[in-house]
Length: 378
Image (cartoon, rainbow, N blue to C red; front, side):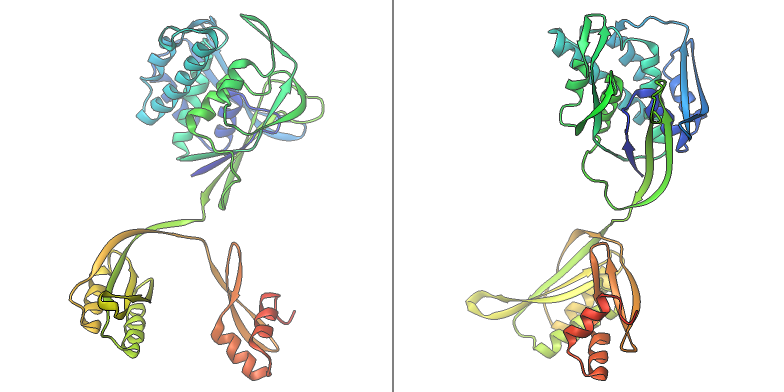
């Protein structure tokens, strides 16, 4: 599953978690993962709110231990106990990113760094909660729109610092960001650390079969817009399959036989088949005959190649084929049916149909093809 984040007003750890819950992550599963860390004295609730006419989910984290300053090692140790293991791995990676960043900014060692504003147990709840929600939704990659960074200042243990906070800027190294008219901390270090640990991509979203979209509300109230982040889930429309390439090189097979071999291979289930002219030893002209087969048909197609060409051997090796979605439709050109093979980047008319229509209508091939691509007799 692919997740696409649209942080129109910014992103915080609790907003990220709320959006994932709104998109369908079970609260009980998230709760169980947080509980498995051994953390006590906390509570996590999710409620539905309406912000500027948009319904969203807001989470509230309460902890009995309200201290906001503790060692990063303590939080990392707790996160490492989370179940299942992938949840722990992501949570630990996010907390280590925070610890390494703070250590670099303050000239200390990551193993001994002490977190101040980020040292609260609510940070652990947010981070483990997001990791658990992503795992529950089977999200394998995350894409994120440019993050809006607000101006102004933020109060910290070290005094008043410019926004975005230095830790946030460091954690967002390599991220796509943009300015905003909003002031204050629009992206928190917790959110930035999660994006870094996830390996979020800021490239354009790939082709998707779009599914559920969840909205996570922040605690800040804005005068003119909903303070929400949207998380859209989708599955990739690009299919990658493991296939087998079969090939043999021949110099004593006639053109008629080569054509017959390729036709037979396609009839017997090959995904594709072709012959490439080559110059062989002693400068003899020949052909490399190649057949793209599934693992299930590779053996039978190998036998076909050997039997029809008389070759003494076959080379075979695994290949990965990435295929975009495609579909077939039909249009009428001058009353003649022409099938169209279409994909994400364009359409191509079926040649046999174009040739038949051109003969019937007395038109050039290119004219029939042009009219077919434009929609035919509309």
